[in-house]
Image (spheres, rainbow, N blue to C red):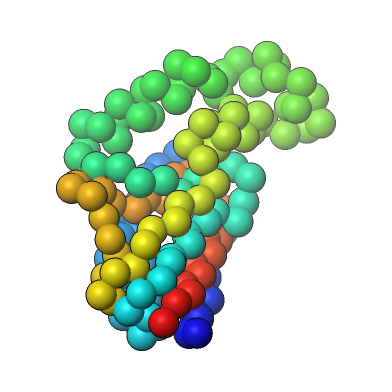
Length: 139
């Protein structure tokens, strides 16, 4: 069995943002040499996410608006977590909604996506360095 472990690093300059990482993950699949297997991509920080959806700017803005309605950043005093001196309770909640990781099958050396599927890194408490783990296993 072959395996590859890589880390992707992000430092989003704004509080929130989405980055399409599909091309990078596809390149890692090629690098791994795995023809049949699985690819795990997961955020290694509690206020960031990895998810799969369509790469359409309107949809990404809809996510931004929807998440802010569900867990607004302000007023920061509404969250017990922020009583610890933090101001990012909303980011933890947004991450919980969007999820920690994705697993994609590798078939014939390629990510086996459905129509329009892309992999995204979601940042909900940016302006600092965070990482994503990519683990590829298979034959």
